[in-house]
Image (tube, rainbow, N blue to C red; front, side):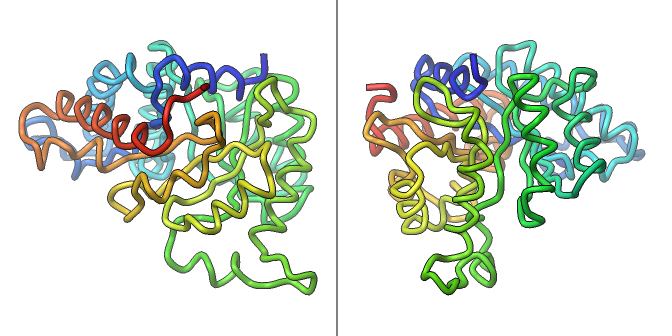
Length: 296
């Protein structure tokens, strides 16, 4: 079964299109957990302990986690090991794992990145990888080839949530399309052979919550494109903006929330993992109020 179908069925089962962003850094950890950690290895170990408790607390109510690789790479080899252990632990708990690396290269190098995260001998349990397609087809095809062999998926940057994304992505081409719409067309082409029974491809798009009108245009033009939706919460996105990314069945996207989950305890009190669980429950209710029942 295509990985996108598996993810969609998990979303329907949980009635929750929430993806918990494990963009974990030392500053997010409670003082009693991070105290005394004064080396990269010690910090990485505390982050892993934090991640385990978060995963344990949410694995029955959310379908997926997204792990921002940069948050781990900055701690060196110990951080990379923490990333891999976190991915594997999440997978063991039944969650889908999205590695947020935005990998971007061509030819053999792209193939090496694909093998590292999605290949048969990959040491981390990753279902999807974020990629940057702005080098063109020869920067993405090696990833697609691995996805075909191993039932894996991609999310390619199309319309990102950052404020300056329009400097490039909103530019108009001669035929009247924007750059992000043209990129959407490429993503659709790249994923044409990986469409599952729900009508969505395992090659999806990153479409930020903070640009609802652009998301609406992409949803209309590309009904078979599944969205990874960053920008909810701390970056200014809300459920009302996100509704345009979903189809009439309540399907079509998964919404990431990082700081709003990881740091919920700083606002709500209590343990960080109990606050994280409640944040996911609150987010599910918020999204369901505008999306409706998923899979209807």
